[in-house]
Length: 171
Image (cartoon, rainbow, N blue to C red):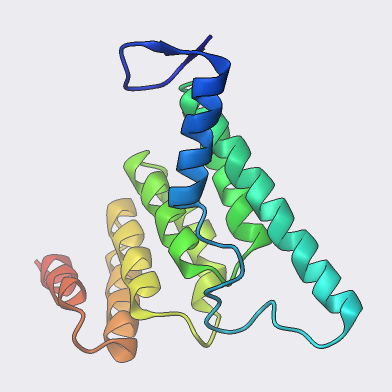
């Protein structure tokens, strides 16, 4: 029997597999469909095989993280989610999901460590910089938080949360 965190009943193994499959279908959105900077679109068969292996490894880490979450093992789950991001760096949706989990766990330094490589990508959206600004603000590094929020506004001038964060940073 597997206990699912947040539920008051135990599931059989088949029920647990159904929960895992549903979680993967809902949360594992990095199957190579949405990659803004085409990090995995390659020409040579060898490069395509390598990209496929990286995505497969990312899926494996994501699935392992979900299993850790189902067993109420937060820290190992976060580590596996981070490995999924590192194996599929072009999936910004995954990055945002995982960075939110790190923020909720109040692991701000690890959140920054996860987001910084993404900010170096030319296709990084303003949301990545916004999340970076939140992490810096939580650590108390106001100067870097302001810098990240300004970068978010350069990429997405209509990003209202970046204006709100700047206001809070200047208070």
